[in-house]
Length: 458
Figure (cartoon, rainbow, N blue to C red):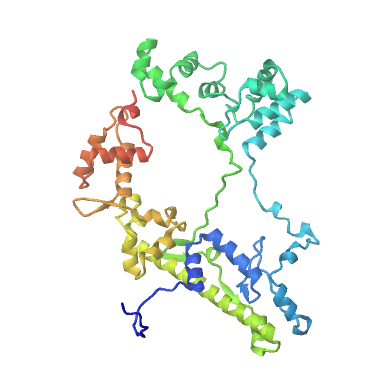
């Protein structure tokens, strides 16, 4: 065995993930809200950074006062304590000057809406407590999820007292709230003068109505099928989830488009939204101090901050350009979609875009994930434009395009003779798109469209 040491010279290639490269990749992955949170943090941490024409919460362009004097600053203390967040705790001397509440729209939750009505009810202290327990035990759809017995035990009341309060709450808006099941919810929404047939169908025939068994119900009631159809149509207009019209306090999402496509004089123009990638610049005051030199510790501190600021500015600008290039490429491939809609979507993969703009697929994936584009046809996530393909006589067609064709066929069918999945498959074949019956059924279910026997009307 040779245990001697040798010195060899060889050439290899390695990908080294520097902190700067990791930062650039991270910025590319951020959605608009995450990016702005990151930038806000960097603006606090780095005195070299500032935003071009920063806008305050009122939508006004703020002026920047850089009249500070170098002699007034202890740069040694500043370098040591700049990361201290204690300065953030200053109290606004005039809080009324920028009262954001005056500019923010607010929608009450279901619980808040019911509580406001409870306060206007002529309840005594005990009844008010019972009402509070009932409201706190409603789910987001407005259904009571606790039993009357459980609420009676919690409030140390008799079940009759709870039932009495519940009956009052069931008269609150939205109508149907406080029900314990679907039947009770629907019954709460009809007047006493409503046809007794409707009440009977709600009580005993909801399953048949859901499965469109109009002829079966008509035979059992010895009535004209059209009469049953009309009663069924009325029941379908009732709200099965009265609470869903109110916002959930825990599920609020805001989508800000990262890019905008506008049609101007017959030409599509791409605009990258500045809010999703604000333009930053170097603060001139601190840049001049860096040039002047002076205090060694101050110069070293500012040089580090300057290097960091330049890399952040470069990374954000690179992110903007990448988003623009990806959107431009999508627009090129899916140009017909913006003219004709979903039916014109063609199969598209990440590799197609990557090859077109000469970037890696992973970069395209990071760019499209969680990013949105506002178009003349609506707001879409960039991933929407990537879809699998199916074979067609005139080339491949996208699955989204096929779904649009299926929906269009069903929307225009005879409601008395709805088309089966096999007939839809045959129709698509005649139009040059080969889709099996099973695929039609799969796409129909994904679009929440009922089967032909459930779509049939008398």
